Image 1 (tube, rainbow, N blue to C red):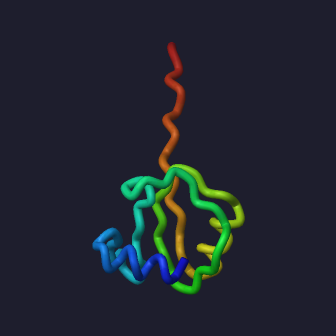
Image 2 (tube, rainbow, N blue to C red):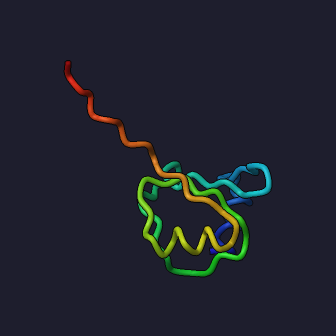
Image 3 (cartoon, one colour):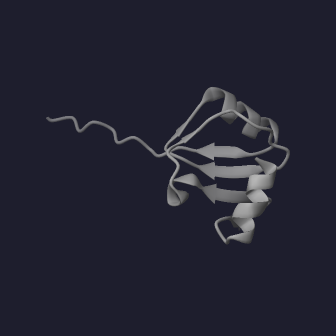
Length: 77
C-alpha cells in the first residue's frame, strides 16, 4: 500500500490532512477497503466499506478510516 500511496500522491489523488495523508477511495473508483498489504504511515482513508482487518492496520499505523454516515430512520409522530 505504501508504494501505491506514493503513486496516488504523484497523480494528485491525495491530500495532506494535518499529520496524515488523506485518500478518498470513492473518488478513484473503490467502494471497499480490504486488509491486504502493509501500512507504515498514518493515513486518513475515506471509503464506503472497510474490513475490520484493514481498519485495524490503519489504526495501528496512527491513521483513521472514515465511513459514510448512515441516515437515522425518520420517526413519525
